[in-house]
Image (cartoon, rainbow, N blue to C red):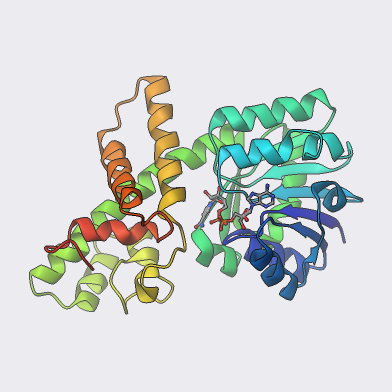
Length: 298
Ligand code: NAD
């Protein structure tokens, strides 16, 4: 069994690191938030106080951090992963970042003789708990093969997407499509209700009809329909507005960079911005459903 450093023990990192522990690995965890660290410790993660300490004797290091700046912060600098990792330690970043940041990690690792794989994930917190995450891997073929083994205890699907940054490119496109889908499900849920349909009946119809989608099955924004949906808990975040806004903005930026027109993604980005302006950035991204509600509330 291996020793694995795990940096970032939040909504995703907590269940993911717990699955590595359950698979028999020793997991050294780091998180700036004491509550997140304490919760992970309860699930068997050995909490340490620095990246360097986490990397000591580690066969692999996994990051699950909010935004590109956090990834650059944890990888770079004198206290960072690149400065302290041994050549034998496989580095994997599961965070959703821009392609540039991912390539920056690849280049920094290569300069120091280290192996890095971009390994973003899809499946939400429910997928992280259920070990059904999809991992999208980008990097050299030998490193990607090693990464497959490391992520296996957390994964339902592992797909090699190509060279450096290919995993994160696939992830950005996937999430852009997801947030457009969330808007569709939000508007549909509100219209069905206003047309007098029983929410469960409408959901049952859509689930086996042409409007079926992951957002419908997993994040339906009406209480009492989908067990793990944030709507059941006053829209407490499973995937925060802030993180969704980040992903949408990264996709829109990628569209600008490549000349691709993304009108629907811009609309999704605008709704997420509006929620943040209302001070709701920490709530769940499915709260966009309120924009379809006749009185603007849910
Ligand atoms: P989160 O904010 O719940 O967790 C991130 C954790 O990183 C926090 O606990 C935070 O304290 C910690 N952290 C920040 N800076 C740190 C540092 N310098 N050192 C150590 N710890 C630090 O976010 P999350 O929802 O778990 O998402 C993590 C990543 O996974 C994001 O990039 C997100 O976009 C992506 N993602 C999230 C989901 C989801 O459904 N939540 C799904 C797929 C991908």
